Length: 266
Picture 1: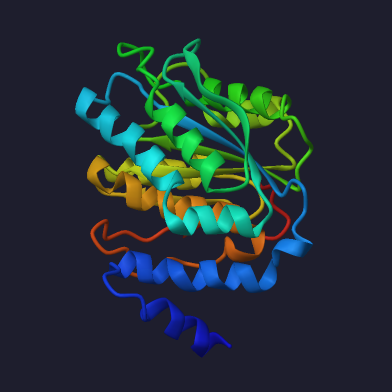
Picture 2 (picture 1 turned 90 degrees about the vertical axis):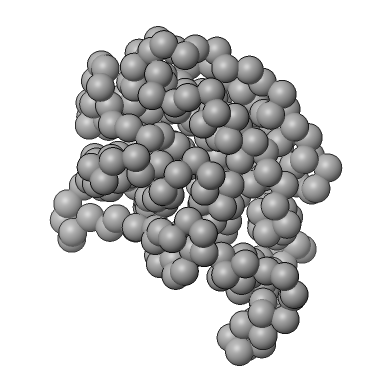
């Protein structure tokens, strides 16, 4: 079966190496999760988007359009349809008290609903420009958002994107120590302006079952990195251990963190 999946992925003309790498995973999810067996709510996903002062207006525009384009990517749409739909919420964050909803909880199940969600996010404007990076507060807010999800889903995932480490307020470990993250996975899309930023997210931020960090080199790579991350998150824990190969233009590999035996995931 695996050779048929690889052949089907590679027979589509005009695909980039990154898109070819994604196709086998998307085809495989159709085989493992036929629509008739899909559950009503497989995933509640919160997109937490950094808009702190380090992000220029050009980078902000690339980020917003990147999210919208990624949601509308054929592989993301197919993955959502294959698992029977997901709940999505998105907010932007910066300082300790600056969290602004971009998209309140919305159920995505087909191309129409997914495209509408992407358009809604793209239509929003930046709420703040001058505040620092308060990642701990963003994680606390994300757990509050998850508690308001319309359904209790099989998986709860917080998807953080950022280009810097926490520099205001509590560090993530405080959020993990004071809030219940036992059933929550925190993944990260890290814009690697500095190498220490990626190491920080791997060691201090990502947590939970199958957690991983997806690095990208510049905001021009944002769409491609987000597509890869969304597909992995939507597909579920059985796929989160897959290591990325060639990422084409972005030239990066994702990193999955699995705590040693006996160690808490936090």
